[in-house]
Image (cartoon, rainbow, N blue to C red; front, side, top):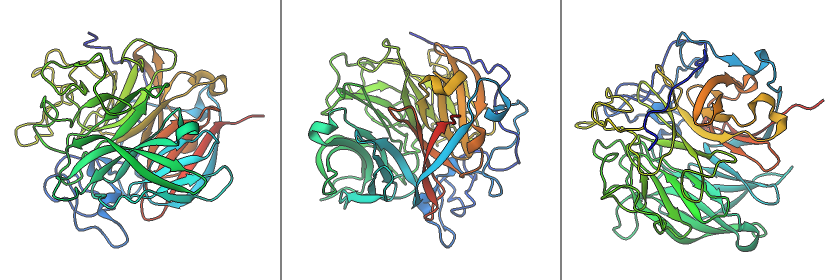
Length: 439
């Protein structure tokens, strides 16, 4: 098992910026959503905002939304040779927390807002709401309509996957669940076809996860989950929270399961805090069965957002019990000597790292093969240079540095364009298409 990969920053990490918010630990409050409730959640939202707009770990200084200086320099795209200048196109605007964006075969964008709207944005057209009617949606804190995935067989069957927080119907408990939908773009309409995974834990909405990653053939679905801010969840072998799950397209355990002895057979890895990004490394087949080498992005408390390489069966060392003590390490090697260490961590303060995508294509210059990571509190995109399973340097996309506010999701289109969603709330959000400039 890969147990302790080297953390190599090669003289590159954080931004220069102002002082301010440091994470989502108790008392860290969010200037856009009101005071803390004493448990890390928020209440008493200011007029014109909604409690679900931001989670406390996503909060940053009001004046800039960027972390304070860490004492280590970061290179921006405008300063480095071999890095392309970028064109940034606003594809859609006037949205409200578009949590994810995926691309349909005809080039249209599929966008889900955390409040429950599912939209199709045709190339050059206006967003069209397609549903579905999620009458049981629980949109609070960091919960709501979250991760999306488009089946590679979409052209034949219209299948997509969505993860959302459910109030529970007919006396069923509240949970986070993954559903398969059938999308008719001609309608346009979308209907829930089946529940693929249910029973992911949720409390106030804090730490709800929930990122989806489909294998290229659509036969394997990975689900990154949150610990629901519950101290026992991440290390529990019977809980699906604080994990990365691996299931078939119908939600069954993979043939290679179990990966963790004594755990639910759908559990691939344990010991996570709040997985916000999953990305498969191009051209690498060994790793997660049917998917290859997978990198995850995870929110830290006041210190150490993490990027991890997923090793089936591994524990990543988050264990804040008793009492949800956020002063413990993200990867607690004293408690779990065999825990897998992060390949990159933010140190203090955190960036509120979120969605991630590997950059592919010669148009990306020296960034080809690098991992792009969106940042909420950091209000930008960091590009992690990758050598095998190590990070050798970190740079910034200067064109996105503080220019569009908080950034949540990244998706690479088949043509090599990087699609980005912002997360500013109050109808101020956008979907961006980012491409290396030509000519």
